[in-house]
Amino acid sequence: MKPTKALILFLAPLALAACSSDPEWADPEAHEKTMELQERYAPLLVGTWHVERIGEKQRYFEKLTFSDSRNDIVGSRGTFSGLRKWQTRQLVTINGEERYTDWQDVEGENGTFTGTWQLVWERNSSEGDGRNILSLSASFDDETTLSQLYYNAYSLYATLYGLTDTTLCFSGGFVHNGENDDTVFTRGDAEPSF
Image (cartoon, rainbow, N blue to C red; front, side, top):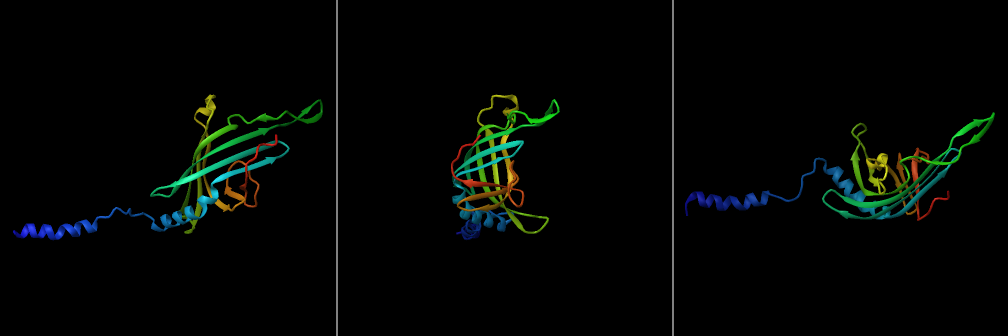
């Protein structure tokens, strides 16, 4: 056997051993924490959640139903559907007397929608620690008006503050009713009371 053939036969197993199908993560800790987050909280998220707040000038109801997730190399992703009902009214003065107007739907903010969700852990570069993220992206199902045609019901990338058997709490959203100005949903199927 010629020396070049022997060298190729010797090096081939080494080259194959060096190749791996496992991805190399830019931030292995973030990937590991994302997978832990998915394992711990994705099963809790699945189900139906709702929130309703009624004030003098605004009333709001929202229901979210999260489906089982599918696991892939990045983490779990799932689908969700929702229903939103949002109305406002104004305090006006008529003949010197203050009255509320009739309730009106907030334009482009009512109806059903579908989309996708994902839980990820993200490193907070300014503080050096990290946070759990609930990412929701959805569009209204009935895109009959021009304003809804390109409008998302959700484009939310929010910090997940709490998830238990009975409550779902994340930063932002439309209704702020928690200590940290968070949106707090309750588990269970419900319909708006208005």
